[in-house]
Length: 465
Image 1 (cartoon, rainbow, N blue to C red):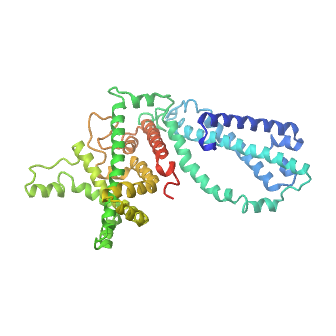
Image 2: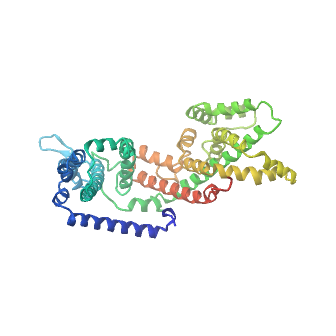
Image 3: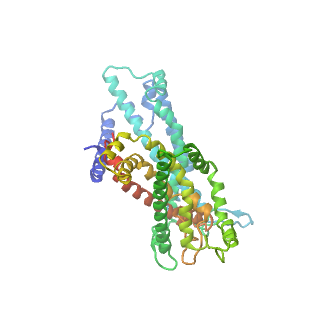
């Protein structure tokens, strides 16, 4: 059984087994190592320097010096306040000057950074121990240690992957990993407009925010969360599959034998996505406003007596958003399906015709299975993207219409991601926005994993080969 298919319990047991083996190896290295190796446990790089591996030794020694300097001059000062996130708020000194006191935001941010740096240092320290062990082994076997030149050249040869990925790794850590960890931590605090640094301190509140999200009381977010979650899933389903099947139908119609001006029809459809989505969505949203072109002409022609509440009636707004999304989505799907339809062997259709199959049967037995097999991962990507499709909702309806029944500034057409945006920028409720961000991740991850495991292209990779 491969590692990917092992039960989670076996993976956890394997992790602790590997951890135990690694700790035992550290102990063995110390007890059986020479004096240089033992000193290197305390002074990193000491052994490599004495063995004339200057690049490794200097790099390890500088890492330890930088770590100690950071922790003494900066990190420890924030870590000591991690349990309270500060105790002294902003005030005034006896001489009238402002005393800013603690800043909960910086305490939390730099404490997280410091904890990560501690784990990174432990990782580098383990490399230091392993390098001393390997050096002793090579010398005991009568072999030469790598020279400075060999160490430097290895960064452009067998270790070039590490050299190449060093800068991107730092970027991912600073701009993705660290903000995500910070957001998760904020979900367990009372960080909002009333507890906003540096004017006010915020502190830990445990799982109170999560309880509030699922609370069905008048002040809880439970009812709103379920309403928005339900609409998010409904929207993602229709926005994905309606566009998919309509785009496939359009592609099949254009590719059908006997259809003239095929390039013209494809060009017209592509033109709809050539215009920036930001412009087209704002324009369409204004067209369906109460005083927009659609209502204006319908009343001018006498078809209606009063404006249709396209954006003020929840049901009409939701249906209209799903329909208007087809304008944006169908051309993409049409282009994808056009290429795939050309790759289906014509012999399959010819054999089906000989067997007496009609057009619908050929579509159901040949075209659709092939398309679903090839585009399965793409469909999953589209569905996941639609769960977090901010542009369509925000530019068309702004998440409205609003309702007193919905809390946290949510509207009837808000998705979880647009509601999160409102909680952050409009309501300044960072704690609930962080909780909602975690829930968005969980919903997206669970749906993606479940759907991914039932995709035919995953379960039967050889099916159409």
